[in-house]
Amino acid sequence: MNQAELDVVIEKHEKWLRDGHGERANLRGANLRGADLRGANLSGANLNWINWRDVVSLTVIAVQINTTRKNNQITYIKELEIWTTGCFQGTLEELKDSIEQTHDNNDFLKRRYYRAINYILTEADFEEDLEDGEEDESK
Image (cartoon, rainbow, N blue to C red):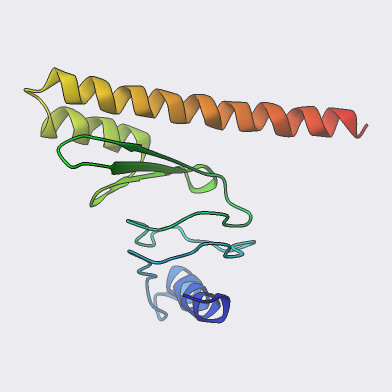
């Protein structure tokens, strides 16, 4: 998807958010590599299976792990506080609930998911620390 096509999708989605007359963005499977999402409101959009590489203006942290599928990806979009994995999309608490329900009899997979989540949260905090440090240096 090129930037012009993406801009149209975002415009329709933001209209949908405002008054319900636009169209909810379905970016499932989109290649957003290098896309500029500055100012875009993607709340409520379908954000599963996206290539987020080099996207501009969002902090996206993705980890690939082997779960019930090889190279399953867990993604956290920090500014939206959205997590995705497979067909799941939701908040951190919803993700944890889903893991507990889906893998209630498999402690190995639950631990693997939680290790990935903890890593992502650590990286998200590290990014904040870097940004805070840059602000301090500019003063």
